[in-house]
Length: 94
Length: 177
Image (cartoon, rainbow over all chains, first blue to last red; front, side, top):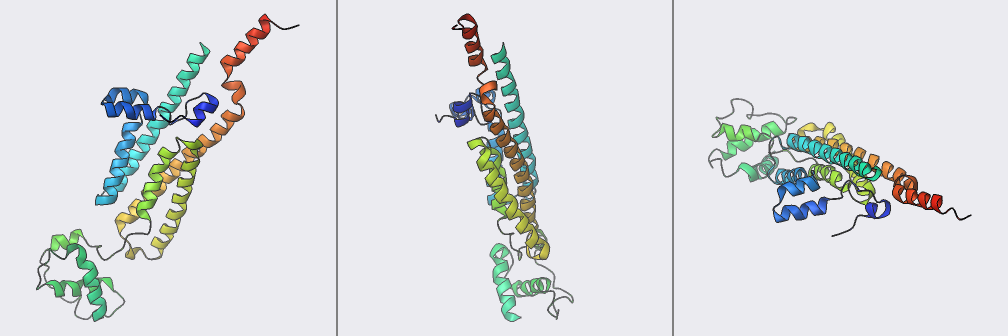
């Protein structure tokens, strides 16, 4: 697996850390494990597949749905990252 | 006029040509050319248009003469990829994709405003969605880049907390004087 530059230099997780492990878990079929490792992966894959199908087939309201799924995905990524950072800090302090 | 009609007929019936029956094709093309070129004198095309063979197919695709906006799909794709790209490489790729997408969408919106009839509504919606997603992705990556710079600048104090506490303990136990 590729190492994270940010984590190597600071010791903190970056917002993308855990994505490779989540992909590996998803490829093995462990959906719950991949959600625990990186909750934004599955909405992200959904958004990408929606984007590709929308660009090919031109759905009628595809742009609207893409917008909504993008906003949900980015919110999940940001919130899960904040939660991860806060729990890491707690572990460090105790 | 005839040449233009033939051209539009060829362009238009790339998409819906096989559905319409052949004897009505000339009438349909004439009617379409009447809709398309409003500045030309409407001779015989607007008065009593012949009954359409498939009115639903025609009404479902009223814009098949129109083009897509330039780069509308690319704007949408770059706006959406910017959220993934902000995760890696310190947010630089997310910032770059967001800026490119916003610049292209501003250009495309200007061309759409100049003559909105030329372009399809779907590509305009794609462009708007791409602009919104690019703005969100750009703002998130910018926040991430700034915060990572702050973290690295103050990294010695915040992040190596355990090590600094260890050093402090060692210093207390064995001050060396």
